[in-house]
Image 1 (cartoon, helix red, strand yellow):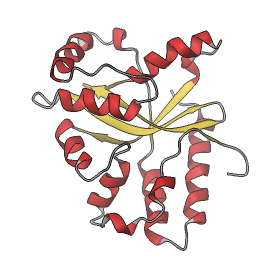
Image 2 (spheres, one colour):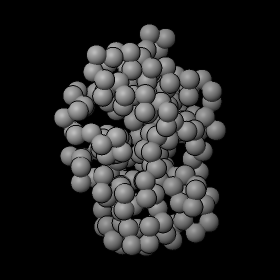
Image 3 (cartoon, one colour):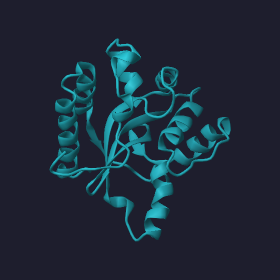
Length: 194
């Protein structure tokens, strides 16, 4: 599970941004919302979840794209919406932490069990560098069924769906959040100053 210090670091990061954007109420509200939604999750390998590989194989017949490193949002979204007809694979978005590093990240769940196809691809790369994927912690912010993920994607240019999901659930227009590009971290260093 997620070490307490990792969850604490993410919450510190979000609280810092709530304060930093205090003069922009909707942006500050977005970070407060993220903080209220955080839930630690356990990621399992695809091969350890019985029957999952067959579901992924069937879903990927609808979407001939292969999974790619550094494309977690696309990988998770394509896998989830490829299974749109049977609504089995959910799209999950939140944060992953590895030591002092924080990333906005997306993965999937199936029958309540979380897995990360991008992380498994990265695992091979991480091993080459002498690291371990086991040191990564995951914190969920949103989990969307395929239909909702697809609907939220219509409100987004690309990438993370947290922003359009927040806007929709809070009945706000996209213009309500200025500086949107700063909202989801991409490999930021967490420190005591954050």
